[in-house]
Image (cartoon, rainbow, N blue to C red; front, side):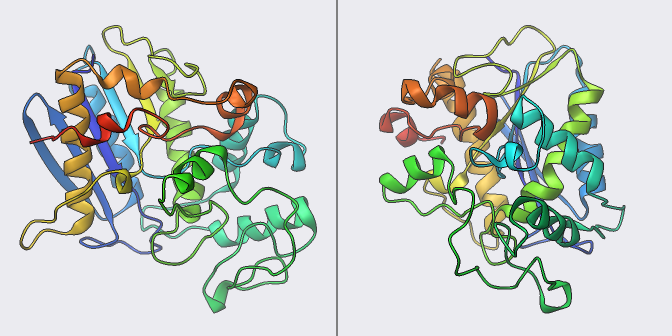
Length: 296
């Protein structure tokens, strides 16, 4: 189905960084996997473009480990137009500033969005003391939020005993909120650059196997914690995660099962929300057997 599979462990660092908690990219082609550690989002965006451009006819899957959509009602609470997922992407691409040294304004934008959504310090929360403001605090707010804390996919993952993080949490080990704020604009730019070739699952494809004609690029959300990831001696865990996920996806492709990941079990009355606004995690809500396939 795919000629190459790219898996990205994103980072919201505010300064260039390598090693733990930085950006790692794995590229799988056949039975070969190579990894690269990028110190900045600017270089990572360049690298993704170079991977795609290296073979314009390749069928490419790009899996990123941050949320591609927000809980139901987020776009409406901001007065944004339909489709909700795309209006959120366009808004973040317009407002997030992120320079070549990773300096960015994500906390200021989160505070501004809180003001528009609730006129309080929610739903976004979590920041260093230096970034705290009237509309954004370092701790989770105690008042009931005006928007859901979880997307349907996180509820589905939680029901299987897993512990996903809320997209509203911007600071803390394992949290995904900041990565989404600075990652979605990158994907939005890639979508513009490869407009006629790039699909975003499930937003532009539906909950089904996407079209993978020659030269097509499919972007999807992944969550490495779905799998058991052994970490080699001296290996950074982030590197191990992208390597294992890329090998797992390529193994599924080799046995013609990867298409099953794109058609998860989602309640019929929730499909429009998932496809139009919230998105989904590749591998969630599918036959557990698929998660056990050994990439080695």
